[in-house]
Amino acid sequence: MRAHRAKGSARLVPGLRCCPAVSVVADVAMVSAGVALIVIVLDSALRTFVLPRGARTPLTRAVFVLLRRFFDLMARPAKTYDRRDRIMALYAPIGLLLLVLVWLLMVIGGYTLIYRVLTVETWDGAFELSGSSVFTLGVVSPPGDAGDAAIVFSEAAAGLALVALLIAYLPTIYNAFSRREVLVAKLAVRAGNPPSGVELLTRSQAMQRFNLMDEVWTEWQTWFAELEETHTSLAVLSFFRSPQAERSWVTAAGAVLDAASLYNSVVAAPWSPNAGACVRSGFTALRTIAGYFEIPYDPDPEPTDPISIAREEFDEAMEAFEAARLPLRDDRDQAWRDFQGWRVNYDSVLLALAGLTMAPFALWSSDRSLSRPRRRLLRRRSGSPPGFPAAPPA
Image (cartoon, rainbow, N blue to C red; front, side, top):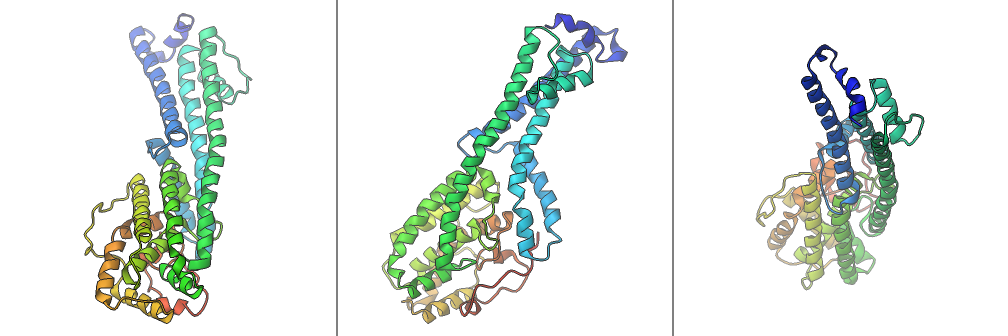
């Protein structure tokens, strides 16, 4: 296969026709570059679509980071969160399609280099053969022997495989998304829209379901376990937004974790192992997801480390519990220290993920990073949850 293209190879570097050794080096460099592009694409596709664990690849990361910057610029002028949410809802789907497009372009580029050296004597011809092969159009036939045809067949197989992976990947994403969102939607009934841990406990008391809270903790332990698995092996799921703008998997997680932490900290009831296990499964999941996105956090914080919740906000929550006639512990200072010891395990990663996903307004989670006065908790109890009139800072 190589012999019948020797003359064509000498024309790669016109000024160096008298130096065959240099021409051979140039040929080898071009083929090596083409193979490297193809290997990078295959590695990215395998780690993104096939490998059942969280594995980062520079190519996938670069595509989504650059696209995110573009979407940030698009969303920045938005004056309402609803508008920003509509813009950001397209980020993950477009990112997936763009990733596959980048893969195909890189495969075309890689095989163009290979064809130019081994098969076709012009760049136009090499590009046409590569494009025809990757899309299996068959409009250009390989001009050489069986070896040239084998290269063409390998490119056709690569193109089909990349498209097939995307087609097979989408149902998996949407199945995981649907399972995630079912419980997020159910939480709105018991914790409000946007959700709040305080609201979850007070509504459960008002609905006479406070004695059934163990069911909630058990159900959300399973949810957190699935979240950890799906949002690292299918990392793009983190950016698929809920059907309603005021809902988010991040704020739902924060509400449940706060409710479980408050239950074991302030409620005058026997300590709940299920509530404790729920908190542990929750902060473990959030930390694993944060680790995938290289978000720094303290893996072993002290119970006395500062948290984003102020003591005054905690006291407001106690007033809300008293108004709901929840049985509370007498020692408020100890209750605050206990809550602080639970919250410190997930405080920083919760807020970081809320910022990463542009989560909607929710008390004690996404509102921590807003450069605006925090709303008093008790004002929400007399009516529907407040809206979010302004977009948070990018």
